[in-house]
Length: 464
Ligand code: MLT
Ligand code: ZN
Image (cartoon, rainbow, N blue to C red; front, side, top):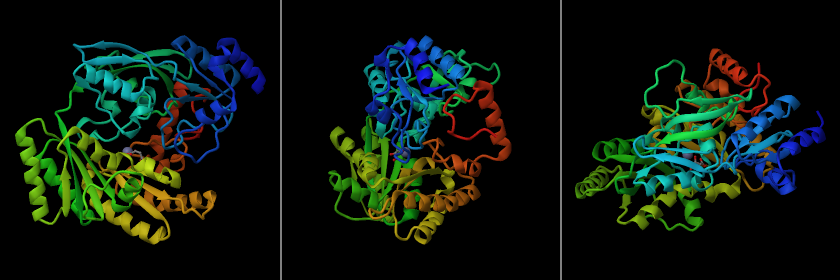
């Protein structure tokens, strides 16, 4: 069907203010933070109800117009990119919190609720929504569920998957499914809710979610430590995990820190070290702070830590977190090519050594920025584009090295995408993490929920 005919069908459903085709909206809503693709959507729709979402799915099926679900567009794998005349379906206008249940400790909300709004809502009720990451001010609940977002608190609280107790979804066929209904226990066969979590918009559109809340944080404090080498990272992790109740354990390289300080953050201490870790721990009681001091001192005596600082106030806690959280923003102008990989925590040292060698051999001229959630085996590897190099040459070189990287990961039993998802960027490499039999089941599941292939086509994997 022609673009004009599709737009006429859509125009009969939505008023002009909620069906946009102006250049600015197409450009802003046709991309995520990946910056590797040129956006080219047909239009952007802003539904306000489940019925409108179902009507849009019906039009998409009738007209063979593909849909790209769109949240805060903070993704880093191209999962929300519309570059082939798709209709972007933005959940911005479905952004209400629908209810709180104090007994269940759960919140029911529309998909467009901003993550930080949900976190504030939980805090005001003496609880927390513990999924957390730097893009909290833009990411939307529906997107975090569709990508099974991870972030900085996974060692204590797990991934988004652990917090979703109910989901309403509109499938690619247009039916509305009400999955799990907030139940804690529900052993009635396959848990379809879990299929939709992390499905990257390929099985259905999340139109409502119920999430559980956790007890409030126990007065968290952080320490930032300077370390002499890679080996020290896991030694520090083991020691600190034994001594403290950790909620985060993050690492970053000296180069990563140099970008953050150039971006305006003060150094944590004068001593320059090749590696840094940030550990967050419960510090509600005096003995927690004493245990932290004692652990720090023995790490220093044993040469695992060369220098460090422990937060003494909320504002210092916040400032120290910025050393880690601001990395992405501080390197954004260098258009990094990102890898987001994981191995089992026990294999992190082995993986780091192999990567060190690989990057020294394959990327001698590129600046590689290392940081990540090392406490859960997840590392972010961002290769910065040399200013004089053409974008296409740079991306091609990175893709070549990715093959080596992923082969090493596969040998270690790791994953090519720990938390950012597959989207467009990692699609060519899926077979490094999933075997052919698994992928054929994934295809069959997708075909069952979306037989006409209208939901986020081209993402995750292609039809056989
Ligand atoms: C992070 O951990 O800061 C995010 O996953 C973003 C990134 O990798 O740039
Ligand atoms: Zn991350």
